Image (tube, rainbow, N blue to C red; front, side, top):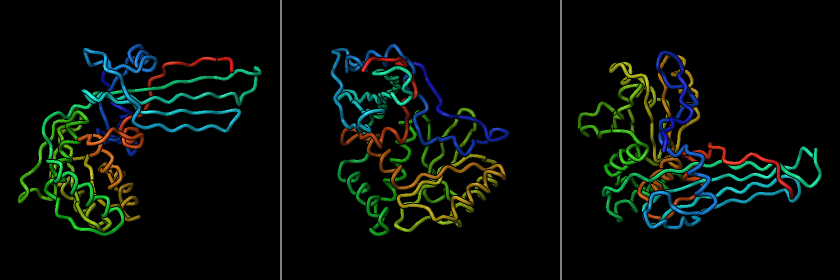
Length: 284
């Protein structure tokens, strides 16, 4: 398996661009032969007994004549290795009757989190609170667990990270060790209220004081409109801040601690099927 870094491009002088995400898998399968075998045989490439992958979620779309798309996620029940593929059939060009261009892209990765996370009751409480916060209500009793599982998400994505001392964090809850950008700060807000500009400005101030150029602002709720505008202005001043709202956070928690098989939205939020397996003209 060969590592990949997603769409990592620099903004300027080592600052992440607005299109680059740290909140994603930084290493996943790029071997087209291996992925092709998985696609054809639905077998786990990691388990010695060739355990079958089972479909955990899929979406099929077709206009009935010219275009069809089939996207599915498969997962190994034993080791957690997952695979996502997009299979498209396009005959819209119409150059040759009864033929279509078929394209298959895919990727996959082993879920790395095998160490114990929060117990089931604590994780269930946290997930319930996030779901409520996305609707603008609920309590925030599981804030300490959220910091710990956020560290777990970063570990799942392939980063070394650490939770700061909660009484002396300077507004920073998790520090991610990035091989290119050094310390990347993550501030975690477990609240039913939308996170506003003031919080983002405080984070940028902490970055400036500590000489950091990259950070993440993570919340169990959502962001005000002003935050995204301020995010753009911050990038122009050399501070890249990635925003992770409650929906992305909840999907990543579900995938990392895999209490249930992963859904399409959970996988596609952190990894894209970007390895081309088939590109050919086929007879309908």
